[in-house]
Length: 411
Picture 1 (cartoon, rainbow, N blue to C red):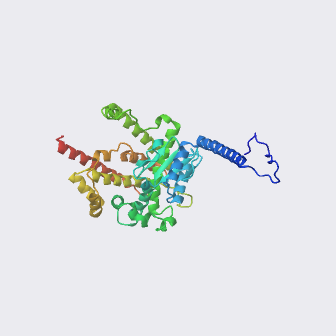
Picture 2 (cartoon, helix red, strand yellow; picture 1 turned 30 degrees about the vertical axis):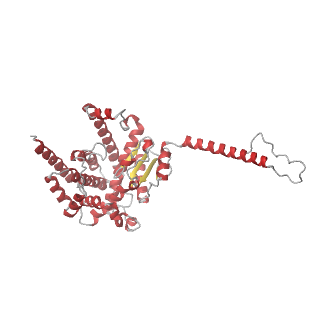
Picture 3 (cartoon, rainbow, N blue to C red; picture 1 turned 120 degrees about the vertical axis):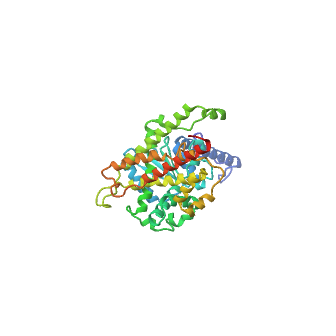
C-alpha cells in the first residue's frame, strides 16, 4: 500500500549519476512500510476479532490445544446425517471442522488430554466434566462428545455381542482396566473388522443406537434452548461461599432447581425419542422398515446402569449390595473394581440420584418405552433387556434404603 502523501517517485539526489537513497531516506521508507504493515495487520485483527464468535472461540481453543480426535469419522457422519435429516431443523452439521453458524457443530474431544483442567472456563462451558458424557452448548449450537465414551460403547458392545460377558460385566471390566487396555478392540488401526461391519451386525446396532440416543438427547437441548432461551440452565452463581452454603438451607430453592433440571432433561429425552422413532434402516438393508436405533437406545440404558453400579461399589459398604454387585460383575471383575476403591466416596444416594448428568435412568427408560408404540418397532422380534435391569436397579435402591434404616434406627 502506498501512502497518499508520498509522490509516485522520490527525486534523485543531485550530482550523482546513479540514484541512491541516503540512509535517512531508507530509514523513512522502512518506517513508512512498517507503519502501513502494522496498520493492515491491526485492521485485519480487528476484523477477525469482530467475526470471532463464541463458536469460533470454542473451535480455536480445542484445535490449538489438540483436544479434537477423529474417532470412527465415517460412522459418526452416518449417524449425524440420519439425525439431521429426521429433524429438518438445521441446515446440516459439521464434525471437528471450523465453526459455522446455523449448523450443528460437533466436536469430538479426547478428554484424556484435559487432565482436570477446563480450557473453556472463560466461556463457562464445563468441559472438564465431559469424561464419559456429551454436552450441548445451546448458545452456540455446539455438541461436545467424549471420544472415550464412544470407544467404551464400541468395546462393551463387541464384548457383549461376541463373548460370554454380559453388558454389566463388560462395563465393569472397562472401568477396572481402563479403555486403553482394550485398544485391540476399539482401534480401527488394530481391528480392521470395525470398518467392514454392516448395519445389522449386532455390536453395530448396540453401539450406534447408544451414540444416536446420546446425540439426539443433546440435540434436544440445542433445539429447546434455541427456541426458548429461558429454558437454558446456566450455572448458578453466588456472590460468596456463604451464599452458596445458604442455598442448601432453602428446600424450596433446591426443589425448584432440580425440578427444572428434570423437566428439561425429560424434554430432551422426549425430543430424542421422537427423533429416533422416525429413523428406519436404509432401504435394502432389511425386507421391511424397522427402527434403526431402537435396540441400541435400549442397550444404552443397560450400559448406563452398569456405570452406576461401578460407582455404587465405590460408594457403599452394604454387604447385601456388594454381594449383588459381585454376582453381576463376576468375581474377577468385582475384585479388580474393589481393589480400585478409594476412601473418597460420594455416597450411594448421590450415585443413584445424580444432581445433573448422567440423566436419570428411570426417566430415560420411561421415555424410550414409547418407541415400542411405533409400527416399525423391533420389540416384537427382539424384546428389550433394559426392563429387567431397571427392576434390578430398583432393588439396589431399596437395599440402600434398608441399610440406611438399619444403621440409623428408621422404621
